[in-house]
Image 1 (cartoon, rainbow, N blue to C red):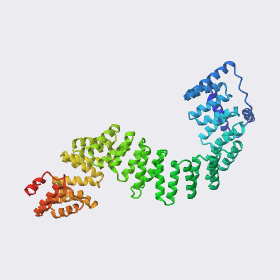
Image 2 (tube, helix red, strand yellow):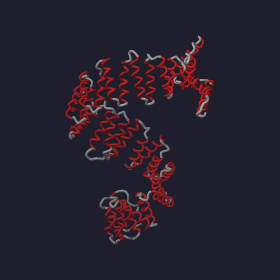
Image 3 (cartoon, one colour):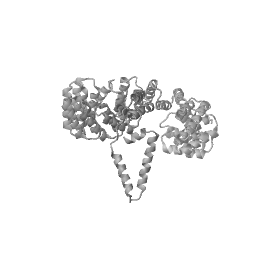
Image 4 (cartoon, helix red, strand yellow):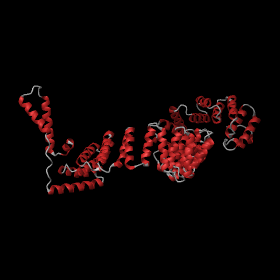
Length: 599
């Protein structure tokens, strides 16, 4: 308490404190051999420090009135949560009435609420000493001590409370909790025994005792307490479920089934009982029975959405999996049905659909989530990614524009917006979006490389070959194995008939990595064609045609056959290319009509 008193002293008090410190330092610096006078002075000071202090003077009526007014004002500011003003008033009241327990208590409370835990504990301790029969003072002191992780001290405070304050037996439960927090299990059990002696058999006592037995790995006693709880509360499913979970977690599977079914007799729709049965049946290698119970639980709106999401996240980590895909999809659909107004239900369902290859359904499910909550950037990201993978340019532009209204500084959204304009054959708008997004991606070399690869395509469409080549070179400088950039760059070089050996080397790397990719094979064949290696081009195209019916690939094959002198076969391939649909060159009809090669 002396530290607190110093804190409340005015200038005179602080000056006295400094002089006392200086005197002490002077004594320490004196020689070991002291004079007789010095010894007498030290003895006098020691006696003075140990002498009892005079009681605080009785307040005058006026000072008492001032102190009470300051106290009331301080309490008001505590209520208003203005703790600096509260402490200002209360400390002034304390200066007049330091022995007032209520003043000490309120100062402690204001300090506790403002985070000054040490002073809170000190003033609360003073309040307890001044009025040892007030339970609230003990509770505040224990709270201040526990907040500083002084659990031994808090335990001692609660023990004093229940011992010294009449009618405080109900705090035995908090005392037991404190013992539990310190893992003092025998003491906790003894405290609960005292509570039972005072209050009789209570569910709270049995439940806490059960938790202690579980910590002690004393399963028989824990189960016995559980049976007692069930017997005393035959219609209370939570005790039945807790018992079933104990059986299940300790491999007492038949007992777990028995007790879980008991819970269902009390509450036939209880989803927790269904989940326990699902887990037990899984452990018993009964997948059909397990899945049935799991689906019944998920169809129940009473099952908490967060619990459903946690279970589905567990499945997400295992997907895609041919054996699990159907179950995961069913559970995702059930989650949406049972919680149709929860954005997170649609979000996790979209994740399941994405991982199981249901891309179109996933995109639409994510959009439903966004209609409920459009603030999740990750959902917008998934939507535009799926739009791009589905090659739906109109949707990609609409969704990326909407997302950019909310998140204008997200570089990836600008990337997909640029991709959308490219797919719509709007290269000028694509370049504008991609260049802006690339600036936002500063510091992210990999993302900038993706922008560069797309810019290479867009500048090619604008016939700005210099910028197109520079963009591709920049992309490949960061990601030498960006196979999309390698393929497109080499193909466009072949169309221009420029740097063909460089184009051959780049395309050859993509074919080596993806030997069965018809697009990459067609690019490589066309570069060989430009290098007049018609036999090599034929081999590459015939490999590609094993897996594709693309009109451009078939037309290229016809061109190669023409160069090899197989003119009738070439015309037949050109005709087959026209039947294959769009994708062929504008010269195809002329080739067929005049039965002659045009390039």
